[in-house]
Amino acid sequence: MKCPKCGEKAAKDDRICRNCGTVLKKESKGFLLLGTKKASSAVPALETKSSSSHSATRSSSASYDKSRILKTIGITAVGAVIIILVVVLVFHVASGKGQKQAEKLAEYIGNKVASAEKELEINLKDNSSFSSVNKSDTFDFIYESEDSVKVNDVTFPEWAVTVTKTQSDKIEQVVFTDYRVLKKDARGEKTDKRFDLSKYDRNTKINTVLDDIDIKPFRITYDAAFRKYEYRYYYKLDSGDVQSVILTVNSNSDNKYMYSVSDDIYPIIFSNDLFKDTMAYRDI
Image (tube, rainbow, N blue to C red; front, side, top):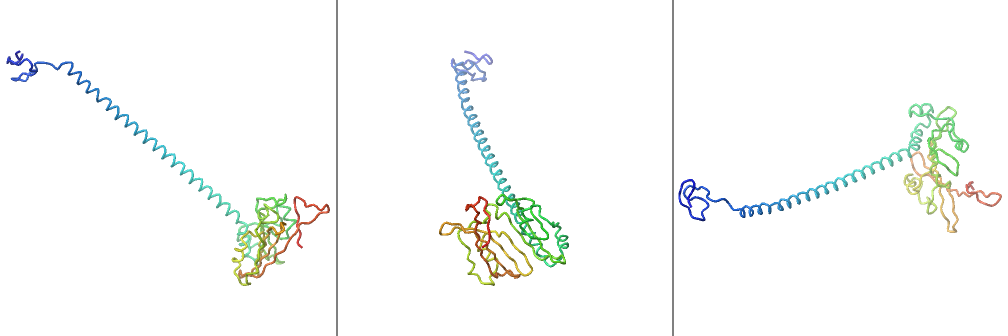
């Protein structure tokens, strides 16, 4: 066999001319097929890599979605907590408005009513918007909540600040009444036992005594010489009967405890010897 280019002789099995490098024989189809197989064998490897990549992408996507969901839940939870805190704060501020207003008015005891109205930017009324208050309380002026509560099916304002004046139109006393204390029960707060304040001396700080009582006062009276706290509560006797009590605690102008009085109250018995669903009470 001769090289077609340079004419040099070549062996039978030579594929390339040893003289000039010319290709004497082309690769067989079997070789090409073998190469094809090698090439095709690489495809599954590529597919495996691609599949792994997609799996990783799906895993990453799932992880991202989970993270996003958890983040959304977290944000929602935080938002809910903030809303609750705001509602509680608003309720707390609103619930203390009446007493704070009473304390501010009490600072003007001995001053003209008109001066207090002007300084505090409030408008005191001659009568309550609730007939129940006009019938049950004595006062010259009133400042009250627009919201109402039911006490034994009778409508009262949530709270009221009443003012009595002297003949020269000066503030003599200020009284804060919290009708919400009687909202659940006209007898007041339910307690485990009767309050015993005999352990306190006359000069004990009044806040120490009030902290021991640990229920909301139904009424607070502000005077130049004293402050009076009235509580209404009830508790169960050993006999199983329920005893209702009005507890009055007095302090002096220096906020020192002076004395307290506990009055038991009982339901009025009607002629048919039955208690009405709506119970009336009288002091004994």
